[in-house]
Length: 263
Image 1 (cartoon, rainbow, N blue to C red):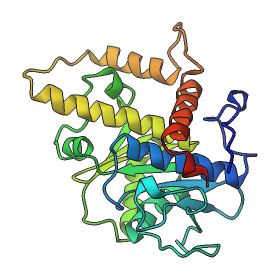
Image 2 (image 1 turned 135 degrees about the vertical axis):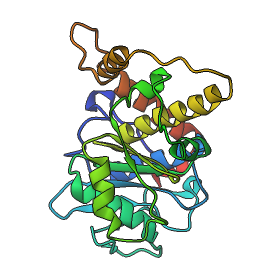
Image 3 (image 1 turned 120 degrees about the horizontal axis):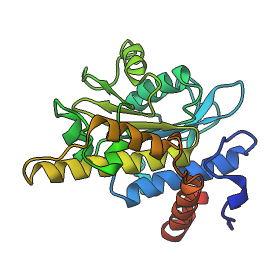
Image 4 (image 1 turned 60 degrees about the vertical axis):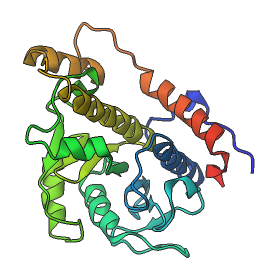
């Protein structure tokens, strides 16, 4: 099967409306392969979901039992908000994945993509009382912009859903205490870029804590930097194309390392 990379003029990290399900499947499959490439997997036990625009509230999620490096566009499972497959599939859906992802999708219409990981650095920071510290530029993207959800056991309890979405609030990211990281985005590309930055922030924090006393910028500098990174800082230049350019580069990488993801 041949595959043409998305036209940069289509703003691949922009709103997904108007794009076909096939295009969305390919983008989500690319994200799965990229998460595997960057070493952010936990066997078969984490998930990335993507809402398909429309009144049906259907979303795509990984087939339970496949490694991320095995996932293709056609193998993704389309389910409803009750976790029921809406088209024939030989695969199952992980119950814990359904509990977390369906809750976020139902509560946040803007969260078209939900990405959840259990990395060593992510869980390490999630286990710290201080949470994510504002000690790197990567971390400052999330300054006062990340929620925290206390650990309640394996995410199999539907009652936990309302507490989880309340803790996420309107934030673009959530740290699940003793568990891992979660990011959301209006597209798969935005959720991935946020996770890459949040994961790097956690890696930097773990490394810095092993080296001695930490330097923390003043609160006003932290807030200003966060506004710069989200493009809302007044009188500062804004790199408006950064996400689109980075996502385009990531798609090219996915096509090089795993061209079969589009199948």
